[in-house]
Each structure stands twice: as structure tokens, then as C-alpha cells.
Length: 488
Image 1 (cartoon, rainbow, N blue to C red):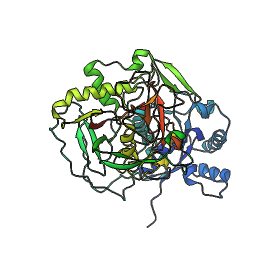
Image 2 (tube, rainbow, N blue to C red; image 1 turned 60 degrees about the vertical axis):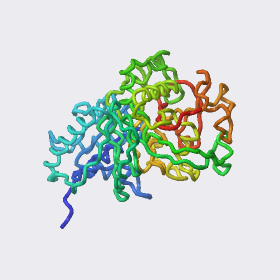
Image 3 (cartoon, rainbow, N blue to C red; image 1 turned 135 degrees about the vertical axis):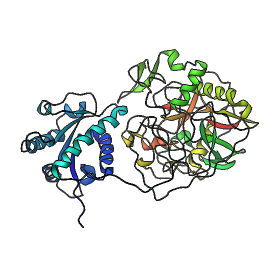
Image 4 (cartoon, rainbow, N blue to C red; image 1 turned 90 degrees about the vertical axis):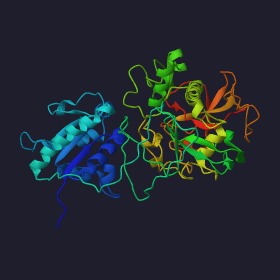
């Protein structure tokens, strides 16, 4: 029996808007009754670009014209595609739904297509509603051309366990291990980064975890591991060398994820805490060319007064400095002192602890291995340009110990010191924990180490051995918590 015909939808877009259009492509494809056409997916090596796109437009049932400020105001292939689309549109029966303008951001709709009702596909929090409107129009068109939309069905699965997020949750005196959840090595799920709000729930860990203070932790065992980089790694910086063995003589727990906006907001509300960026009145943001001081940028307004974290509750908190992270840990210790195992406290991890948790014991370059993979972390290669929900790239991007997001998303503060001079560290390699680099009473003007890279870092800078040293608040700086012995 021949496969039922699907609704052919052409995605007319600019190359600059590829990330969000690709996400939309996958959503449409998942409907089952839609056959979206995206050049990156449909064109084969050796095919004539112009000819294949022209054929795709002519045979489409519906065209989405994706608009942004860059695409509208720039001569290029989008304008050429639009001319082809308009030629086909003119031959459509009056009243037929064929061309739908889709605004990816606030921008002018080109005069030639202004008579068609458009859809605002922004901000991210409004996309579910916009997508529902799109589907409604597509179903009308599908009925007109004889396409059955049917209903999607899937085999029943056991519900995923959702971890509690209340930071006030009481805990037993000692950690109680959970049963390790089943892993699904043959299950390949595409989760679009647009699911950026509080509705996204990270998948279960593939290792045993424990939950304290509303955070999920994994165990990092004591013993030797490789730290730093060798000369064979051509991407390595001098301050990562030499590679050496380092022994951590105790077990410790590392948070599976960075601290989220939701957790940090609970802390701020309970103690009326004011971050350094709020006190200073500014934070730092990347404008596409350089870092700029942004008045009004802080943890609640990461990119300035016109931005906010509502809808981004399970994204990592940003625009915080090491002192803010320490204050959060101090609060956790006060709240949960009576339920903690003796000798353990909540604190920032040291560089050595962070690196071992991120790369395991074998000196691998990335948490998952030695080869960069843009599908395993939120870096500049993802094209997203902002934070994503914690766990979005889990478990494929996890370390061998089960830590998620240790490559990309946000740089993470550690407890380790660099020194006052950004060009020369007071504490070199090999790593010596008792040489003063883990002095928790050091002055505020001492630079601290951050690890892991962020959403705007290139592949080189999401390697597990990379170290940067700063003291200010940026929109890609966050932190995660360790549950470990007190630093002497």
C-alpha cells in the first residue's frame, strides 16, 4: 500500500536564521503528516541548488516565509526565493492558504507580502501558541489538497521520574541512594532548544544520583586522575600544561546541573540578597563584536532592563560572580546543616574537583571523549546564542560520572584562585592544593578560575582543561555546587 501523501511545506529563510528554522523543521517533521523542505536536509551533494529549490517551491502545498531584521534588510537568496514563491502564489485560487509570513523577531514585513496575515514566532515563551496557529492553517490547507492529518500515536512508556525542585525540601541525615534509572541507548530524541521554559524536564541520569536541597548530585570517587593538557593537544593553552596526575583523597558529590534561576530566586527572596551586579548597577554582555558594560544587567535581567528570566526558570543563573555563588552555598549550609553528613558542606568545587567531575580519570578532552560534537553541548556551534535549560544535552553530553552541561551553556565559577595579574598566575601547574590557591579568605580583588565554556564559546574553549580568570559578572557566567569536605 502506498504511503499516504503528506503536506509539502517549503521553509523560505535566510542562512542567518538557520538555527531557529531548523528547530521548526524538526517540529513539523514530528507531526507525521507534514513533509517540510529545508535545504540543509533535502539537498544532496552534486545537486543544482537553484533548480532543486525552484522545483521544491513549485511542488509545495504551502510556504512559510521566515522573516527577521537581517533577512528583510539584506539582498541575498531569501529575496530570490521570495520572488519564486510570489510567482507560484499568483497562480493559486483566491482565498487559498499558501503563503504564511512567519516573523522570527520584531521586524518590518516586506511590502510585497504585507497583505497576508503573519504569525509572530517570538519571544520563545509565545512559540507554543504561534505554532498552534500555524498548525491550524496547515490543517485547513491539508484538507483542501486532500492530505489526511490523522493523529499521532506512540507506544505507552513508563512516566519519567520528576525530581522535586523545592529548595526547602527536608532531607534525611545521610544520602540515600536512588535506584539507577534504566538507560535507553537506542532512544534518539530531538528536543528543540526552543523548549526553554519551566516545562522542560531533564531526562533521567544514567548513573546513580542523590538529591539534596532540591538539587541532584552524582558521586565522584577519590583517587588519581589526569589533569591539564599535553603538547599533543594543539588547542591547549600554556596555563593548562603540563598534564599531570593529581590525587583527590576523598569522595565528593557534584551537582548534576548548574544552579538554575529558580533555585537562585528562592535564595534571593528568602534572605533579600543583592548580587554584585545589582550593587554595581551593571553587568557585561557580548554585542556580537565585543564585551560591553550593560547598565541594568543582573541575574534577573541578564541582558539588560528589557530582558528577564520569567519563562527561563530552569536555565542556569548568570550575571553572578564567585562571591554571589559563595553566598548561595553559605545559605544552603545554614538551611540544611542539621541534615548534612558530618564533614561535608555545600561549596564551590575546586579546579581539581571540577575537572575530574567533567572529564573523568583518563584525561579525555571533552566530557564525552576526544572529539568535539556540536550535538552534545550548547556552544557557539549550536547557533542558539543564549543559555538553554539545564540537561537539554543530557545524557549524550554528560561526563563519565554523570555531570551534565560541564561543556558549554555557562562558564562555572570554582573555589580556586588565579591571582591579581590576569597575564600571570600566582598558582601554576602542576596543581598544588596547599600553595594558597584554595584560600577561601582571599581578598576580593583576587581573580578566580572559571571552567567549562559557554553558549558563545568555540570548540576549543569548551574543552574540560580550559581555564579563564575573571572577577566580574557576565551573561554567560554561572556556577554549580559541590557537596564536599571543608577546604582547609
